[in-house]
Image 1: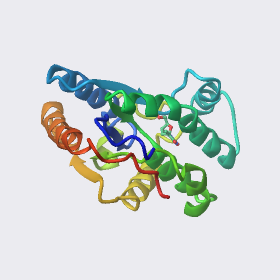
Image 2: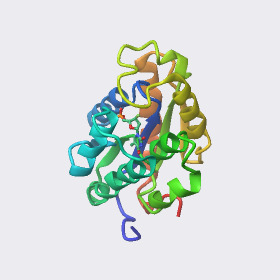
Image 3: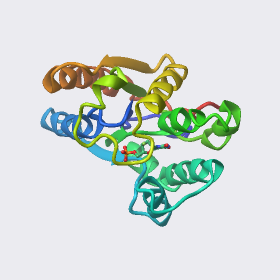
Image 4: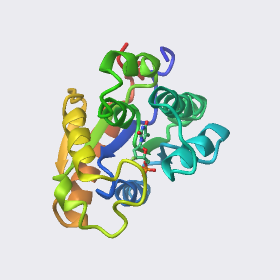
Amino acid sequence: FANMLAKRGALIVIEGLDQVGKTSQATNLVEKLKQLGHPAQFMGFPERSTPVGKMIGEYLTRSKDLSDEAIHLLFTANRWELVPVIKQHLRDGTNLVVDRYSFSGMAYSVSKKGLNMSWCKGPEVGLPRPDLVLFLDIHPSRLTEREAFGQERYEDLKFQEAVRENFKALTEDYWQVVNADRPFSEVGQDLLEAAIRTIESVPGKPVLRLWA
Ligand code: FDM
């Protein structure tokens, strides 16, 4: 991505446990950014509309079983197949707000025990590195109270506790941890401020490669 130095969009990722409010916050953030004159576009992983995404969807709703290795690689492939779209948006100056990315890919797979960190990381290496990761943090016991919790695979308290620990182990300097156990609008305001700071800082900076 060495030629992407001029005015470009920021790659902003929202991460966190199931049902913490990532999708609503991401959608809201896109709207707020647009209102302030920053071109913005929502994206989410898994993107279930592609052929790979359809297999992931069937796995998550339990209509299909796959080995832990196979589903891990499908989640990664689902990101790689959208890299051209991501790069085009950033080049066009559109800021991307992405609901889950490789950090979910790592945190969930590694929580399965059979898979280790370095094996899981391999296929993620070289994806566009986010300029900002907003980690919506909450204690998992606060999530099990929510109505939709428990419907899909992985929505189990013990598993979510492991996922939270594995997320935290991935923290890097481009991460910001946001306390998500607060009213929606307060969380949203923090996300907006962090996003704008990042958007203003990216022009002239290349898009880096994740874990490379
Ligand atoms: N998930 C999501 C993974 O295990 N790996 C990944 O790479 C991604 C992107 O899929 F339980 C898990 C996390 C969650 C499930 O996510 C579906 P959504 O946000 O509920 O669609």
